[in-house]
Length: 89
Length: 433
Image (cartoon, rainbow over all chains, first blue to last red; front, side):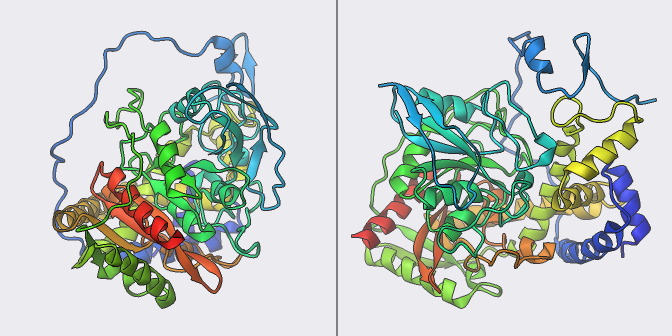
């Protein structure tokens, strides 16, 4: 059973905003969905390593990329050729 | 032959988010052919929104591999089609640009999430279009709109430049009014690209052959069970009867893992989405984040404002399914269920050459009919298994119920896309004759 405070906590973990009015509706929907997910409790067996496939690697060599102008073209705020982001600390 | 195609469609069904009125084209196998591209596939110089406000104004600086290939083949890219926001939906109603309507009945949804591509093709605005299919997003709208939609084998078409939703499930594929055109478009887009490390070098270069004599067709009981409209089941059985008339043999098969398929699918796709969609932070693209606020506050406010409810619900579901204390119960179990479903298909496809059933359990819903998430999710029950198993699947129109199109779904072994195309072609040629 997921509570309204669980929903607020998950929204915080996901860094996704949630408005007060949405909390009861999301809680109800989550409970219905998670109840549906319970069928997975009846899955038997453990996870096993996948066989027959291999990783694809490449050499870590410089390759052509976007120009600075292209890389900044879609950024909302830039300063002196850098992308500007909100302060983290 | 090279030039510019004038494209001024009467887009009464809201199939397009962006149209290119003057679409350049060059020489090649698709020279001058109008092709529409789903709006989650990057097109250099043409805005790409994923049906979301969070990518408003975004103009990709590069082309997806499939778009490079389209341009090389001479196609005229005439526009970007409407879709459920980030591909999350089965109706195209979650688009920030308004719903697309179904040309077969404008009061109905076109299906989703590639509903704009399907409607553009069905309405005759373009002969072919690219869609993407994570859990049925090509086949569902193809079935609902009465066109052909091919989801290729996982790893056959490059995902480079496809804006990721659920990487382990999704593929770009072709949509068209005829199997032949769907196959032609597939021949253009299925070429090796080292930039997608999940790709195999297995190009598709095939002309459909209408030959099913001696073919063994598996009929899974699970595809005709509870939740499937019996009238849809009947149309599909009639279609399978047409294949029998052409010399195919039907064999009952079983996919017992189907009972876990939808839950496993939703756990996996939401988990992958919760990671993939973290990049939409208003810093590198999209409407600018407020840099005066602190990081978490700015990020949360932006995402609340610019993501729709279904996208936020799925990001939260995935975050929950991966969170400490729950990951073993949900994500790990979903992966086991996925493996078992793949094994079920492999086992069945050792006995038979293809598996056939309905694409969708019902005909197209009315606009606004699906209000709660679960009832929307349930509509993916017959399509999501092919994504979990990574196998090719095609939907081809097979008659109508209440005047609305029904799709026959044909699934095959991994990398036998040619065979599912041939079977669809044989059926189509027989009923058109």
